[in-house]
Image 1 (cartoon, rainbow, N blue to C red):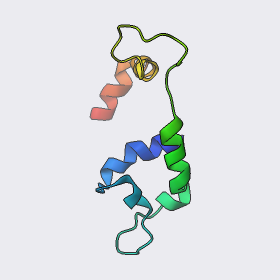
Image 2: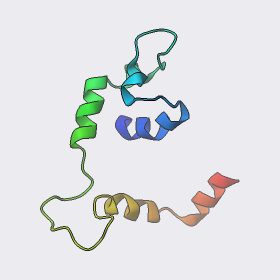
Image 3: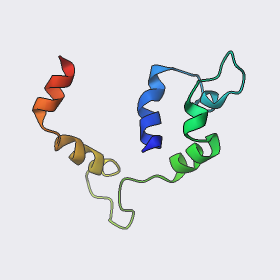
Image 4: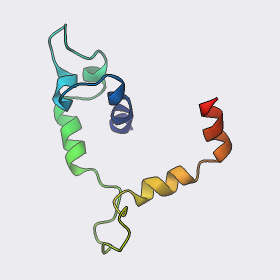
Length: 86
């Protein structure tokens, strides 16, 4: 969950490269990121994470890699989504 949380919050503090979030210099570092997950652990998860079953043949669905996430998001009741926008 930390990984997905970081992916969702990284655009709030934009950097030119993902590795810049783990800078050690006080002037350019991003507080909190290093305490949540190490750079190597982040890259390892990013490289290996899959939201689909590789054994299932690739159908004509162009979103097969993220279909699971789309289906889960669509399960969220619309009233909760509308409340967030207010």
